[in-house]
Image 1 (spheres, rainbow, N blue to C red):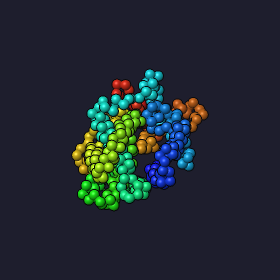
Image 2 (image 1 turned 60 degrees about the horizontal axis):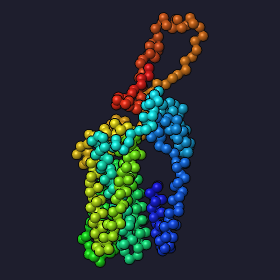
Image 3 (image 1 turned 30 degrees about the horizontal axis):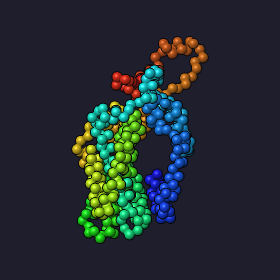
Image 4 (image 1 turned 180 degrees about the vertical axis):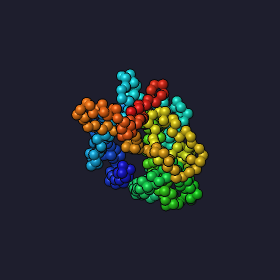
Length: 386
């Protein structure tokens, strides 16, 4: 939905640029609306997963109750208790401060698997960002009317966004990301085979590549967020987005090469897109898998990657319950029942002296394991209820 509104904004931008030809007035007109984003910080809720990872149960529960109320639902009475069971019942003040501080950006490079995934995600993000923005800048240079060419390049994104809604839930994230980037790269490089006066054919190949790279640009955002663990997600996405933003410095120089040779920028962007798409096959698939929460889980996620996983297009759903969203109701929990009062003390003695089959069955040990945060030495804390 957000990408659809973004595409609509690009289409409107084509109309605004057609009406306003002075670049100073155009800059003020298109930038004034972004002042609203300075105020949404006070209204945008925090991620409940991140709050739970930081040990802030009360704030996470309030947000979940608000989400349920907006969607016309009502949380079960035992929902908060089940959330509390997944956290440490009592934390020392020093541990609480350690959790609030959280790991830094250096944790992305301390372990080999996490370091490899960070480099591959950043490379794919860099390629997507550079190719997408480069094609957006280069669109008006194609065709006879620059405003019409920019409008067509914006409309070409809508079919790719619609297809991603269906493909990502069936084929996952990795293969659609790779195919879209390779198709975009091949379409750009194929312009070399055309003659210099084939402007229409070049425009068609450009629209195909713009549609494909728009789809991959849509996939890289949730894919990166699912690969990075919850404790590092904000820092890691900020790091990858920052590195990929450095590629935007090169874009004006690449597009300026089109003054001498029309297809040269498309060849450069196509090569970058193919390299990024092929490197993405090394990333683990996240569909049908439980997402990593801690840094340790992030290191273990995808560590058993094999070439067979790379070749498999449609991911296989694991037999165990390790989905992306944990169903707390599926876990084993101990329910507390209110026992009826016994009026006479003599009946209690008789109950103790007389063996009762129901009572014996009631004394069976029931264990409930809670997944909690790890200690400073790396051990997992587990609480058993009897």
